[in-house]
Image (tube, one colour):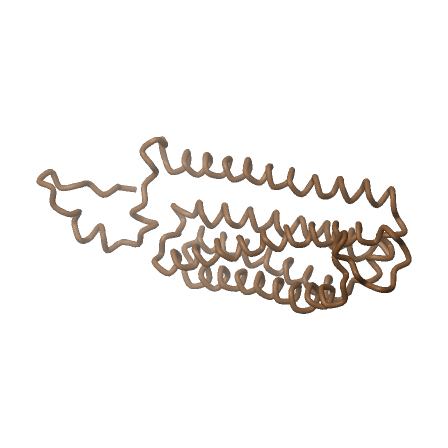
Length: 233
């Protein structure tokens, strides 16, 4: 693909070049040999970042395993106060969003600009639906009833003195996960704004691929959190 050549007299590039979509005019940064080299480097960088995310959540899973082994009765008591229905609904929402973000990447590869934008938007609203369910139907009722971590716990009915420890695990794990959902929504809003200007296409979709990989990690973490938190009783 020919790149835009500057006029030797300092004039602007020819109008016919500027009329082409951005993804067709895009060329790799100067420190990369080619678009493929840039794509592979960017993807490797994304995977390295996602490795640190896995380490973050792995720490929470290790804490969960240790405290559950020490105080199983507290975890069973706390889990019994969660709504499996809302947790399952949120799981379905995120699984659907995994499909829409994968479809967005595919439509960028095939230059289907309309469905690229639609699927990015659908993924954004799936994240919004997840947060609404989490905050309105789960967090707020628990906060109102005093099902809080540590010394803030004030729920009058408990079968274990260590139940506040369970709620510390629940609030810590799910709120950190929710913060990642919020970050993902911000990234999808940015992708959608750029997609409106046809910044992405067969030769340039690094950002769509990278954000899609991030979103899959967010989904996978919830796939583990749902049974560990909601189904142990």
